[in-house]
Length: 324
Image 1 (cartoon, rainbow, N blue to C red):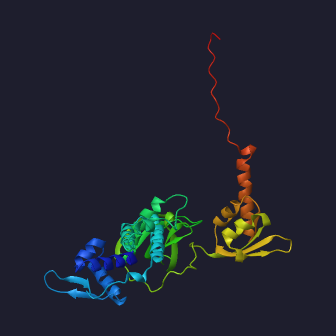
Image 2 (cartoon, rainbow, N blue to C red):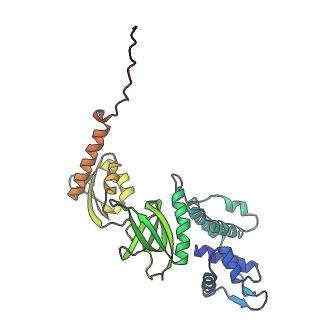
Image 3 (tube, rainbow, N blue to C red):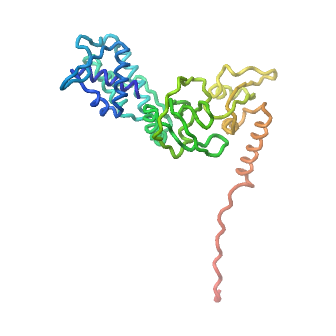
């Protein structure tokens, strides 16, 4: 990650008199040109970078410059470490681990053990880790940094898998899953791709020029058109409905029930979410989804009722002998 790399470069330059760009590039596994851009960014942020030519030359920080540790108090450092630990629990990135150690070293004397205490825990995968997504993350992040096209097969909701060629721009953690946000050349538009739905990921040799647009939080999470949804919920399930759909979307109906109005990506996932409530939540509009919900519920009932119970395997009767 670029932020982690910039922080690590600053720490290295503060602790060393000088270091050459090639050594920095090898240490962080990036190109020398990337290091030059990083040094420019650090200098623009107010940390004076100086270049020293000749044998043994390289880059360093002006000797008169120091970072005042009072800019970050003990609580600031604890909050920063908690946030980095949370991200690193999902990606297990070597560079993030290094940044954690460097920040922890800024703890005031006598309070290092206190800083290691978990005041705040950010667990991005509370019900288990997703190793496949983590492996994809580690392949996609370098492609973003190096501006390399990604090709993969993507199976979106309700559609067969198809090959996509994407200009990767941002990795997004959203709703307990990783997504890639980038420009899809097949759609000629920006899209969010769920990592768990990717297969055959390949970083192409072809590079691209990053487009100026940036990821926005309101980006739809699925590569699907939006649909207007009206749900009805009974009072007993209000807490669960507010947790899933947000309290601001709920209003009181004339008959005492609750109405929930949403604009969501279309797809069967809506029906499956409502089935997960086990009753107390129904679709009012659109009619097509209401019919789909009733059909799927009837099928589940038939397959799990007495008539749909699997029969035990038939046992073969032993052949009777001639003497029996």
